[in-house]
Length: 281
Length: 334
View 1 (cartoon, each protein chain N blue to C red):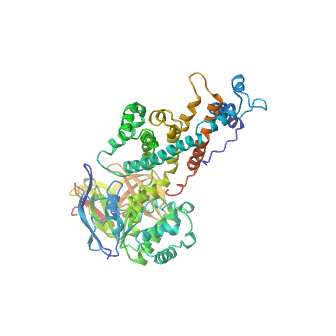
View 2: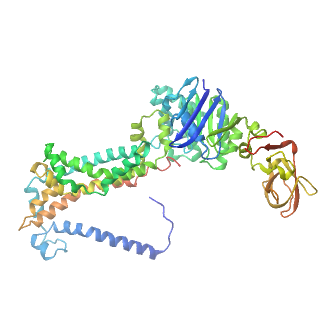
View 3: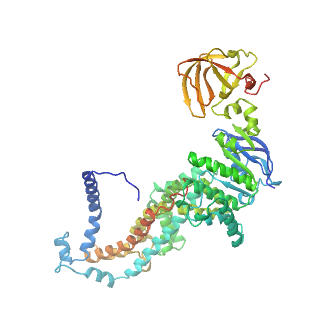
């Protein structure tokens, strides 16, 4: 933890906590409403959406529907496979590109960096039609591979941008010491540099993971088949044009929070762990 | 074995020439120090010797073998860095042994070498610690140990003392000198600090603007500087430079005289001035004399000197030890 200067002002501490608590409440409120209402009967959801479930209104009917209808476990699995695989490739290729950009002097280095960062400013959805044509031509429609490829492309620009900034800060002396000890460039990258930019990797992982997990657009267009449905797409079956099964929708969304929460907790621990302290002065 | 030869080494980054033709021979077992102001190319030269940077032109011979195209790990060198550059994920023992492990040496031999080096640097008690658990001085000793276990033909030091505090710097300096006496390997040492250069070196190489200004033993450089740059760079406080015509030396463009070769006299001397400031250092005293015609002169007196700031004094030069320079900065005949 970062040390803070000692403050003895109780009022100041109170004020800062009040602001932080207010922000937390605002941020968590929609999530809380979803989770709370997923445990209530349909009537209760509409009659008093903000009240907690009591013995009268408590009901697991939403979860029962979700479990009974559709293959939600399978949807979860699809979402996890897509998210974890995309994340892996984004971090691997992003870090490698960032290392090359920050470590080696070559012609067009800064142009290449700019080109790779351009993707941050241009939304990938603008290319949806072309991507779909590409996937059709490649026979990849209705496969998880299609989603992983698209999400990898979507995540790379930000990853390269953030990681190359961090890699510039890794001591040159350390890398040179490795070279003199006979380590290969790959060993230097994987064993010396990557552990030192772990906090940055965790940041990139969190920023990359959430949009992928929550995305509805590409699963709907590229992989809407039953066996490749992701969990956000799966939840849509309960939203009809005329009737929406709110119990089931809220339950599905509540369940969808869990895996991504676990992933987030894993990465946020990495964010805090600073093993770089004392490596170089 | 550990001799080093540089033949016409040049280095340019784009259109900037950092090194403009370096020729140098270092004998086996010699301790050579590259010294110069920042940006003079000394670190680049060391990195070229280490193989971390390619020379634009010229060749590099270590132990009679042209290593210009050989990767760093195969040049028979070891390097100690300013920022220690220890591997943060390894303990002291593995930090020291990694290079040998990479070279495929048997574990028992590595352990033996690490043990010897650790004993030499009194690191025995720290072998299981990680770099983060060591103090700055200990880290630099580990970095030196990592270099020793490789048993290189040539040691390279890149400003190894710059990150240490003053007391540790003196101590580590002595340790490096002792190390050189013990193992007798050729060492090349880069620093911007002339005290380190003077105390450690067999020979000093003064670099400026990518060109070698002078090569010689510390006392040669002090007593017989080749040009005005070397004269001003070696010695502290800096040598005083006076226009020759002001002190009646019409044939001389610039006259150089070291602060320790001037004596103060209230009766008469070469030049008159007013004492503006006196620095008492205990062992000696620096006196700043404002002379109207030549500006500020620094005079260094031995021991405690009782000179009142504001008083008028004459500076008397030790004529045997003044240096004459011509307009282009080179030494001129007296």
